[in-house]
Image 1 (tube, rainbow, N blue to C red):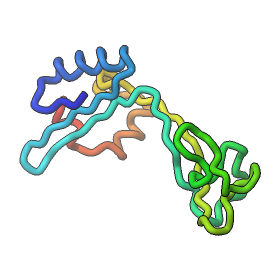
Image 2: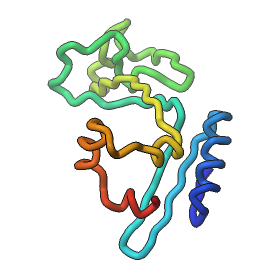
Image 3: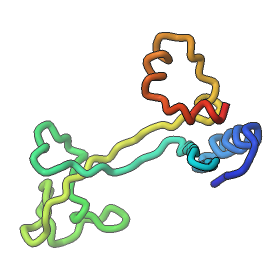
Length: 132
C-alpha cells in the first residue's frame, strides 16, 4: 500500500491495518524542498551481495545466486555442493538477511528525553520533525 497526501491519523491507521495483515506499507509526501518517506515492510527478507575478498567467516547460508534457479533448484552446470558455479560463470556470493521494520506509530512516538534518543537525535534529519 502506498499513501501520499494523507493526514497523520490516516497514515497511522492504514499502517496498523497493513502491519496486522502482513502487507507492505509506504507513505511519503513532498513540501517544496522538504519531504519524507516511511516504509513498514514488516518482517522483510532480502539477499545481500558479499564483495569479493570478504569471504572470511562466511557461513553455510552463502552461495552463488547463479547456481540457483526459481524454486531453489540447483542448475546442472554448478559445482556439486560448492560455494561457486562452474568456471564459465563468475562467482556472486550472497548472504540471506532478515530485518524487522517498526510501525509508523512507533516511529512517531519516540520519547526524545531519554539518553538513547539523544544519541539518535544527532543522526535524525530535521525534516523528521516537520511531520510532528
